Length: 87
Image (cartoon, rainbow, N blue to C red; front, side, top):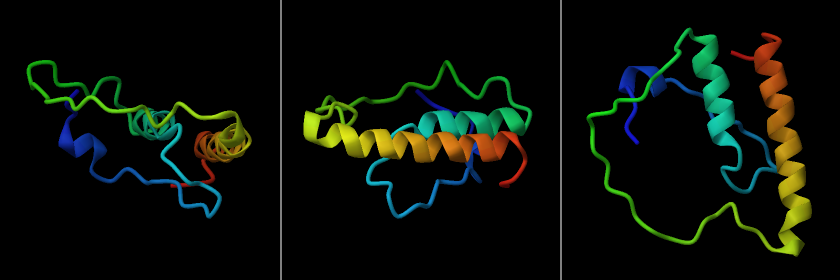
C-alpha cells in the first residue's frame, strides 16, 4: 500500500519504555490522520513490492501477557490523542 507522503510525514510514534514492537501503530497513526482532517491517504495507482515473512503480530502464549500490556499502553495513548492531551 502507498500513502501520501505529506499526510504521514510528521506522524508521531509512541515513545514508552514498555513497548517492544510496533503493535497497534496503525491505529495510533490512523487517529492522528483523522484528527488532521484526512479521510483517505491511500494512493491506489502506486504499486508496492511486498516481502513475505513471518508475522510479528503472531505471538506465543508467553509473549501474550507482554502484548496485552503493550496494547493497553497504546489504547491509553490513543485516548490522550482523542482528548487533545497530546500533539
